Image (cartoon, rainbow, N blue to C red; front, side):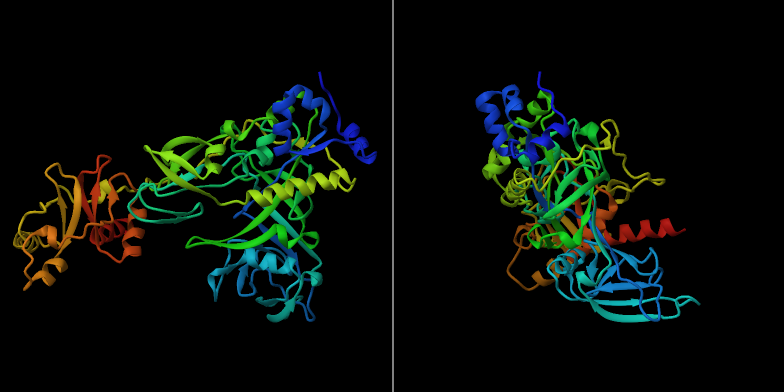
Length: 502
């Protein structure tokens, strides 16, 4: 039976005798020699991840101006990016998803943090309401990270134990925090570092907890608490991490824009896993072919998205996975190359005696569960407001029939279906109007074949956004079989809004 202690491992580090390997290397060692023997030979396994951590930000202290100003309760902009002012007079928190008032999604809080770490000059504009002890009301100046008293990176949710993969069943491209998802299961995106993922190497949290020293942004940081949305009962543990921004390396902190979604910050994070016993070693020996995640359909705009299938990290990192009988390309949102670099750098720090392990003062919770937001009102669904039954047309019918229907029923959208009510296209009153005087006779000649649709079980809010995005006034509504069961228009949504306000 292998039993080791933090004190013993740290002594071996001081003496230059500790055996340290990356998580990737340990999997191969365990395959060759077995996890039990590997546990005797190896002292520390290093992990690494490099991905976008949208919940992150930085606490900054500017020091007092002369005369002093109370920015708390006022406004603060760093390179035109708004920062939080609900702290004290000259403290602020800038979140990585905060967007520039002038550049929008091109530049945000994540970019400001990266620019600070790079030593760049940042423009500070602030205003306060003025008090007897803080008479000044406005200030504009420039700062660098060296001008700040404190600059503390704080990531309240980081290093997901595992992360679901994403695809899209809809007929349109979606722009999400999981990147761009192509229509009709056109691609699969995923995040996380697989075999290098820190919490995945110690899924029982025997060495991970409050006070544990870690690699954070190229410097030494600490785990401060369990992360937000920590959900160990489902295998989705997270950690809150904190560290001195002034010591960090811009190679491991990168501001980014996720196309048509928003800004974020890529953070390099690594946690050392001491092999205190054989149980920890067995968990750390699990290969990527055994790490499974759900592939979710983001085409369903609801909290509990449907699971398309279960996939392994080995499949995801191979570049393609099978979805409904065909191969679909995969692409990572996190960098495995930099994750590997983080694990390697942490390994070298320990080997050189520059990094020692710290035992957690409290381990992460293993039995808490993540709860959804409490809602006091039911979310209206499309089937509750759509017009039904819906009048449809067949592709071989004359255009004149559509014109008659529009005139008699005073609406502008006619879904075109086959005889089984499966959607083929749509014709609008405008299509009919511009066909007048042409040689076109049948509805199939003027219908739009690529149709934006709604599902009857979708939230109305999601459909309202879709109408706005595409600049259209109505959508056919289909059921799970693809049959047309109704139509929803901007007028239907307006009526709902009117009822809400009464």
